Image 1: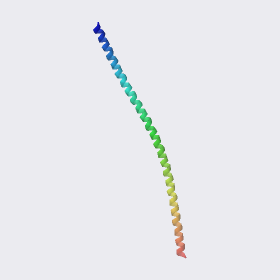
Image 2 (image 1 turned 180 degrees about the vertical axis):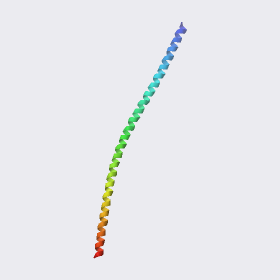
Image 3 (image 1 turned 90 degrees about the vertical axis):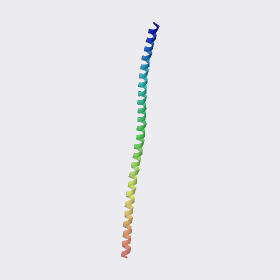
Image 4 (image 1 turned 60 degrees about the vertical axis):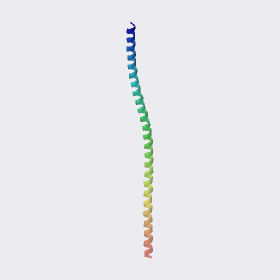
Length: 92
């Protein structure tokens, strides 16, 4: 009778061990998924920051292009004025 009880107890303990292993596997998968989600959230925040930086750089590029256009116009106007002055000096 004691052997039968011991066998039943061993079988119950084995079933508990199998269920604990399954539960441990599920917990590992859940923590991995949560870690993936937090990694994804961090990555999204970094991408948002980078997109803001890219917008700022785009604005700065537009300002630089505008400044270069202005400089081209000023240099062209100065060359034209110098040409007119030289032509006037040669004429006199």
